[in-house]
Length: 528
Image (cartoon, rainbow, N blue to C red; front, side, top):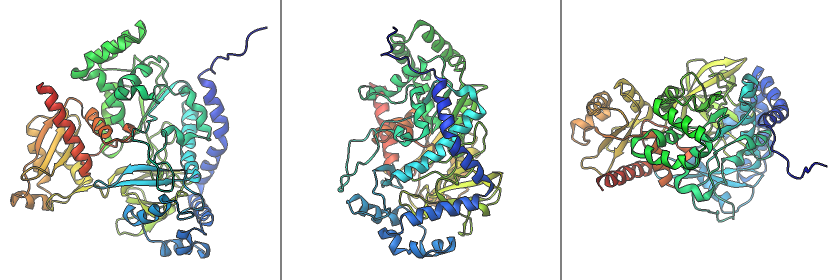
């Protein structure tokens, strides 16, 4: 009799087949909601309000007696993190039923404006709302592209911060992004994921270890990251002359002869399609400041499909990817969503117009009610009767050293108008005398700083500050790999490397100092 005590792992396509079967009901529910998004959203709101009517927040704002969405909007003001944080602090202290009937299973830390951290409460109900959007995306993806069923790379980042608990004994941070999938149909796909969860012994050089595992897989079908800078920071380990030789030598010791030869060929011609001939999809952000980085990925993977990610934030999900298209419908079955127009009026999902820009407000099962993310989105089209959106930028992402009032959209336009090659960011140098802005680029020449300065001087308050001598002119610093710099600074701050979001302007004083510190350290290493 054959020994069956050791069973071979399932064929790579089997988990995807099992996932698709389990996800079918969720997909049908979402597709049905696309035809009547207003009804789906009303049902979502009443479910959240009824579940939390007896909480301290629900009692104070009269959840139980609300009869309409207008009641909800009139009784619950718009919250930002500053105004909701006292409620969150009560929940962190161990007080029960503050924002939600269900006690948080953990708090997820993310960055806020300035040096502020945000510890977002996560309940099991909130995790199910995230999972709903993830499952629908993956189900449409395998439906549109069955060949994707096989090994994939997902940037499932370990939490690099030190273990921490709140005063009430609840963990701050999850073990990894994989916890978002626990208990959902998507959890069945984890056995097909390679190179994502880096063992603790490799955290010192996670990039090289992740590359080793990915390159060793010749049948890779998908590369899924949030930010394109994350994938570029991995590839730049092989392409950046300062690190490439040492990295390739290290990989030669662990890869098979055939895989190493394929890697060398990819590096020499800067074309990675031959390294993974079965690659079907690269999934990442492509909007706003991510556009320049995703364009570089296109040059490294010519002919491969780059599918835009939906708008996911730590606080909640606004839109989701739709198969292999660039369409991203609003996540109408996850949270209740409002969209504030340019006049300041909140609009419902069935009141939006193509070409108009809005700021999303989230009401979630995690205890955030009418919460303003600070993002700006634009409606691009409709799927059935549901609007689809793209990310424009951060509406509250601003720097104001001396009254110049720069924000993400102003700087993004200035960098675009300056027609810089490669990618670039602007960093406030607040400790310089006089203070000013540093243009960091991986391709621009010296005169690029002058072009950016010219564009910024079209901004009224910036021009006045320059004329009065309050600000120095824009200076420039060239680096070999901007994505690598961004992720190095993110890790130095103890954040998950996969959480780094591309921006044109570094508005956070904490992040700006971290970047400047990495630049100084690298300059010292070069001198030595």
